[in-house]
Image (cartoon, rainbow, N blue to C red; front, side, top):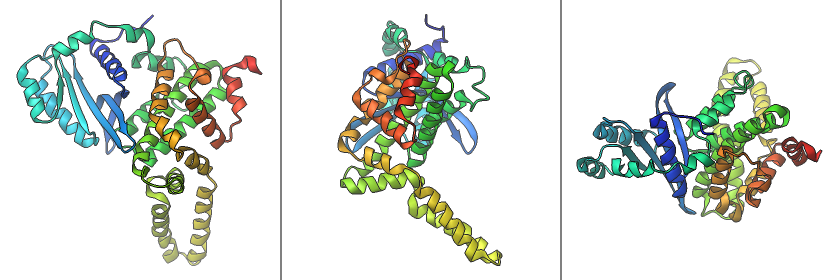
Length: 351
């Protein structure tokens, strides 16, 4: 049985369904934060992969109201797209005036008008297959200790928000950290296995989209160079090793100046920090994602993970594609988690 949601939210779900079926990876309800201030929510965030070197990010602003103020929404959405570095903008409005579509065209904003939206409202099939965002969040909130136990809902909210700041190795590493957190919850919270798995799949889908995005810049490198760049990014983030080294040099120079044993101490600190970085098992990730066949499958795997997280009749990844299962196996190896542990947590009868 589907949960009743508001008219505006329902339209967001119908449009999400439309764009999913059109081949996009879709995120709904993206919080956009600027300098610590909550600015707005992006109704839909769309990601597409046209080729090995081309990716496209589109934001969709949706107003399902009697007085949608469509012209103002076009201005707003256009400005928001610049702030979040989106490539394309779509405004969905109940307004049917031709002038609105013409104005959108002048600003390079696609307008989906009331005629288009009325056709979407005739189908509810997707809500019988997928959870709405409201139902997904409710499942998370139903775990009474979720707020105290690492803030499960907050983790998912944070994962979405990272998309609005631009995809980098830093965001990829944060998604990977959240995915690691949720797989630990699967292993340690048997009463919450389904919800923890849903959160694991969802955060992992964003990580995979992130890796697909950063790979476009590495597509012309040879295999060994791709491994090197990926390992560097997964280890040191967007700054890379050289950037982290410069930051350390600047920070430790103060210690050199104001401490009698500054040079010795700073040398020890530098050695310890770089040793900690070098001990990270990121070579496994670099070698895995550098493979051409893996790179080609990432977009499809991300969509499959997102679908798993939102299925109304939940299924684990045990019967998912070989590419998806291979990805999870790689990550478990990276995290030094025996693969059988996750299998037994999902299916206790296999113990």
